Structures are given as C-alpha cells and as structure tokens.
Image 1 (spheres, rainbow, N blue to C red):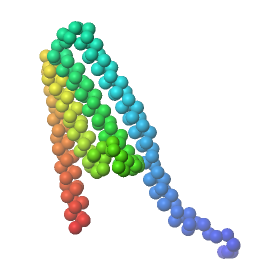
Image 2: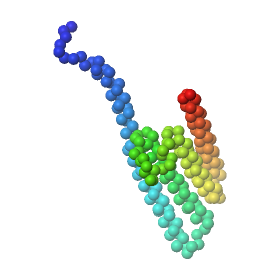
Image 3: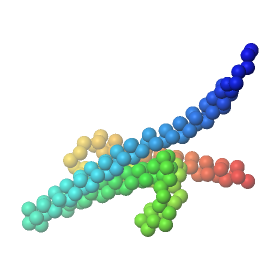
Image 4: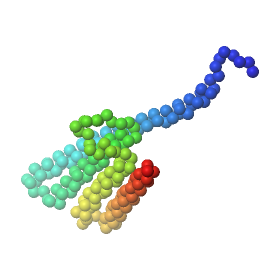
Length: 189
C-alpha cells in the first residue's frame, strides 16, 4: 500500500461514532419538552373549566334566591375539588417530569420553589402521582356515593373495583420503591 500524506480518518471516525450517538441519544430528552408544554396548555383548559363551573355555581345560587340544595352544592364543590386535584397532578407531572427527565430547573433559593422539588426523582414522582390519582379517584367515588340513587349498581361496583385497584397499585409501587431504596443503600456499604 502506498502511504500518502492524508491521515487515516477511519479510526477517528470509529472512535467518535459512539460518542456522537450517545450525545444524540442524550439530546433526545428535549423531544419531551413539547409534551410538557402541551400539559401546560391542558392546565389552562382546566383553569377555564374550573372558572366556568364556579360561575355556574354562583349564578345558580343567585338565580334560585339562595335556595340551592346541599347535595347539588356538594356535587359541584366536589367537581371543583376534582379539577384542583387534577391540576395539582398536572403540576407534579410538568415540573417533576421536566426536572427529572429533561433538564434541571434553575430555581435555587427561589421563594416559590415547591418543597418537594428539591428531592424529586422518578421513584418519588411515581409515589406522588399514585397518591394524587387515589385522591382523584376518592373524589369521584364520593360523588358517586352521594349520587348513588341516580346511578346503576354496576357503575358503582366498577368504580369501587377500580379505586381498590388504584390502592393496591400504589401500595405495590411504594413497596417496590422501598425495596429499591434499601438495595441502593446496601450496595453503598
């Protein structure tokens, strides 16, 4: 073979290939950013729904001369609480997910930084989300029990079954998280 003055680039390209691929894969986490922005839009829709339902409640009170039934008021208020809990769930997913999977938020010493954000990781986020889902399911179940006379029995049964499944799922996730944390602590010693 004739050696020329041109350097052989093949070893350089081959050694940089995996690094470039790793950088590209690491960069791909930014593809999730539009998903979190979409959840921010969904949060805005929930704010609109909350305000519309609150306006409906207030106007019903004024139109009826203050004679609105306690059950009707309770169902509307539970609906408002449900919207707030879903909005809280969205905030946890938006902020916690972005912080965990996309990029760190530069909020050091920010007066409004949520307390839970300083120690968020995928395990903590899963537990918080499952707890929020159980809370939302509980609100739905309470609304169902209040309105039980107007619902078929199989609907109530399925809601109870689904709620119990949520409870067992959250319990299983908490146990798995505890086992994983213990394993990590034992591996450090």
